[in-house]
Figure 1 (cartoon, one colour):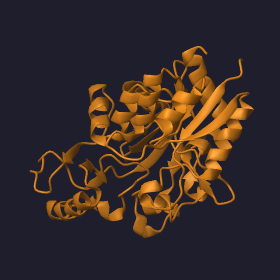
Figure 2: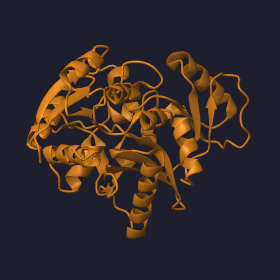
Figure 3: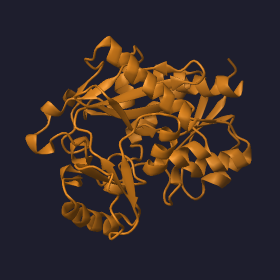
Figure 4: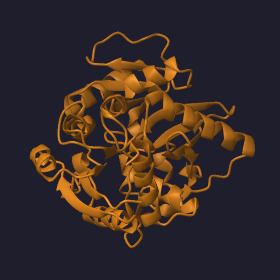
Length: 330
């Protein structure tokens, strides 16, 4: 394979604030750069800020490994893909439309429903006094509609009546200044499924969140406190202990979700299974976290699943990059 000049474009995490939790820490950036070298290419780094367009225009990489979460705006994850399409530069990962839709939880659910993928019932609130849809069942969980990494989600986001919903909704609309998704809360097991490739899409070993390992007050809500403060690799089981029939259904639903949203190269699908075995897709992340710091025990789901599939970190990066290179026929 021809050696390519590969730009890694991402946002660097400089603080442990709620609003930078999605950004890549320096350790992850270093590991991705090593993976690009391992794949036989020449990497360089570009910070995904307001100057990135001019830098990419000047340096003209052969392909971009895009990890950019964006710095502002309701379609922020689409900004770098849009720049790259304007410049005619190939890139790893999903396109402008897919990243815009996937960041919007409600729109994702509309698209999934259209394609026959099961997802919890929901209502989107832009105002605190909007009428409640009588078909929305309780308990309901409230989520900021355009945030990732469980931002704005904790145990008290699950509400059991309209009065509690209105109180929490008012708080969240004030804090996040964006629509709030009210979603039917599915009590049951929670899974995450990594996907790798395109036409020959590979389903990585399924990961399950083991809520029994968390303090009792967490319940079964994988919120930001559970994901950060209480996070430990001991809380996750990969491969998940599921029946073969369940594994096949979970994998097939993840594949259908990937293609329904038009994802490319890699993605992660989060879902729940209730006590009756019914599976619900919660959301799709076309920019899954890639942190893998074993010393600090800060491990994102996707690398855990890749390791369970027999890949070390550099091999994982190589295979993601190879999927995009093959897609572009570079």
